[in-house]
Image 1 (cartoon, rainbow, N blue to C red):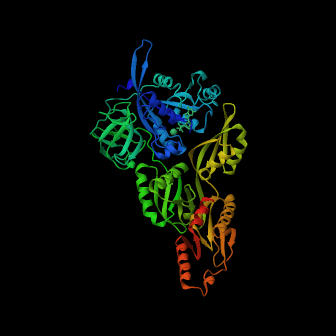
Image 2 (cartoon, helix red, strand yellow):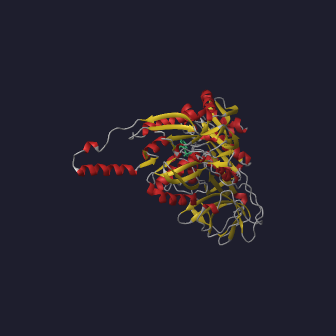
Amino acid sequence: TDPAFIRNFCIIAHIDHGKSTLADRMLSVTGVVSDRDMRAQYLDRMDIERERGITIKSQAVRMPWALTDESGFEQAYALNMIDTPGHVDFTYEVSRSLAACEGAILLVDAAQGIEAQTLANLYLAMENDLTIIPVLNKIDLPAADPDKYAEEIAGLIGCDPLTVLRVSGKTGVGVPELLDEATRLIPAPVGDPSAPARAMIFDSVYDAYRGVITYVRMIDGSMAPREKVMMMSTKSAHELLEIGVSSPEPTATKGLGVGEVGYLITGVKDVRLSKVGDTVTNFAKPSTQPLKGYSEPKPMVFSGLYPIDGSDYPVLREALDKLKLSDAALVYEPETSVALGFGFRCGFLGLLHLEIVRERLEREFNLDMIATAPSVIYEVMSDDKGVTTVTNPSEFPVGKITSVTEPMVKASILTPKDFVGTVMELCQSRRGTMQGMEYVGTDRVELHYTMPLGEIVFDFFDHLKSRTQGYASLDYEPSGNQTADLVKVDILLQGEAVDAFSAIVHRDKAYAYGVLMTERLKNLIPRQQFEVPIQAAIGARIIARESIRALRKDVLAKCYGGDISRKRKLLEKQKEGKKRMKMVGRVEVPQAAFIAALSGE
Ligand code: GDP
Ligand code: MG
């Protein structure tokens, strides 16, 4: 296809503003999916995506569109639409998708207005010099107030409010006009057709039958089937078994040229060999200049995953190996815990990523698991050991600690102005420092904070939502490390630390954490033959204490003189029960108690 008649664009929006619905509508308006085959959220393929109504992996689709000029001449175009994930955990994937486009449709719910991720995505699109097409969606809703929000958008991007398009992805109204406008306004891709090929990978997915499918945007040159190509970051070379476009079902083509968006299949079985952001070039005539933008996805949040049934451990290992094929950002290594047995310490991009992985393990591999409290990466300086990187609180070095640093984020929170007070209070209680605030429109405020990531991963979002009746939205990005007065709090049973409950907290919050956990355990652990002290400690210093009173009753006493088979049955039953018990020192603790304490039940 002549690049002059190609248009590449993405849709950017806050979550739930209707991106996927609009994308689906475009498929039916352009005729690439017949009404008969249409099902809700055609492009959100993973089950979890469809059920949660969120987009995790981006997808690209090619659609035909025709524009008729004043003289009545009809020009055919190829539109490539890239659906981007909307959640903060996947910002890197969003930014790669944007780099594959010349234009962005900025979609805003006409009943909600601009939200935190609308802004975050808009800024990313502007950094990539994309042509922005502002659009109000869901105008069919009775609560829609398009005039008001057109003003809001116009104030934000500096356009005339009358140029803000109004559509409904649900009913389809305004969608053909939107495609016309996108075709007119978005620039055609430019590139050098005779240069060595450079294709940017903006997505790569694992397919059980075909191996890795790599989605690319050709910048320069061209590629054809059977040709050998090379991934520039790893220098790994592969033959192209198939090259094609999705419209939306994969369709093989004779190749891809400048400005085109499509997929490559090389038979590779591991997404790590086809990394998002990497540049693909010809093997025979390689480019020497990779496209800018490759960066390794970095895990930010760590948690231990343990099978509830210890015999599931090999299944968990196999499941993680399999997930890793399709999720380059997931990292894991074996770990053992006194309390929970054998498991894995896993690293995730963020909390949503953690939840998705956990849900996929449970659903696709039928595993029951317990996850330990999420932790971030701390750098601990101690006299004996120098700098230690700690992703598991129980590995916090002992001895004299000279300093601890923790990862920080720049957070921006958008809230109706009535909730500003309560949001500020929450941010302060999470050790946030305010960096500024500004009005968006007339009744909403954007607050800027720097905050420790460790405070955000711990149910911050839930609190934010409940304090603002669900109205506030949050976006954040990493912002370096900072030292803080952090300590490890251990929880001890009969003087022995229970690793799964160790936590790294700010010194000011250590006491509260100690009291909470000792109380919880007191209520969860059954009484034993002897008294069991439960303590919280920082190093050797005890900061909280509870105890479980001793149990007097002897179970066998009841059977004294009774028949022997009843006695045996009772012992048998006790043995059964013990399997699910963990010994911590002399104390028998049902695993269920650990699980309940960790999940805060
Ligand atoms: P995404 O998170 O941006 O991909 O949003 P979705 O497309 O998943 O839509 C979120 C919710 O809004 C779903 O319940 C949709 O049915 C609903 N929705 C999307 N577009 C429209 C629209 O134009 N009108 C109305 N009334 N609802 C819509
Ligand atoms: Mg979606």
